[in-house]
Image (cartoon, rainbow, N blue to C red; front, top):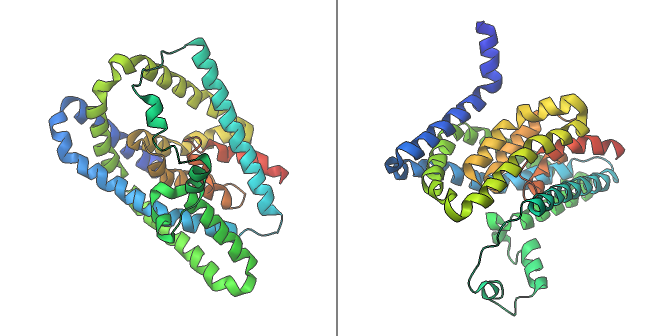
Length: 318
């Protein structure tokens, strides 16, 4: 009995603590909203640590993964397969959402001066927006979490340049690998305080956003959460089964609890990145480490790492 309990705590102890922290924070937010302002800074500190750690973590993870890929054609095949899988996931979720809204239509909110809000700068063209979306004008701006896609592209190019530099770049490759290992350990340290940090932030979310769930937002939020929950459990289970059969389902749900709770507690794609990175690593895919590194890009498309499971199936053709 003691042995089985120790095994359970070893495998699921962090998950249990995270659930307890979120439940405690929710209870405080509902019944003791007056103390929430005092514990909210704890949640803010935790999220700020995640935001700060994410920037170097993304750079080292992607750059080292790309630089360590062997073979000249494998990188292109991997990127092509990943792009196809991600786009397919977006199309499936978009079509499902359109179907739900077709059968359960919602009244569009009336926004005063909506066109003026969209056209606040007539000289700002779509090409200018695309440039700002993909790149930055100075290196220092890459260190801002507001320019994450630009950082991903830059890290990817650094990895390619390292591969092309061959033996001369071995010291730099060692630096990338060492930095990746250091940032992973830093991530583990930060996630150890996640039950307290997410619990405090969840208390704030419940106390501040709870009253807004009623009134005008009740129907759209109810439909959104109902559909999102059904799609999350049904759709992603199907994807996991396609990826790796019954083992794909069990391994996905076993490792997706912490990322899910982190997403619910923080309401931030960026803050959920570290938890997804750890979950993807635990899945122990027999593929290049580039797969879980590119999870960063997928996080902005669909807030769940299930496509990494599906990628395992897809990459058999690479």
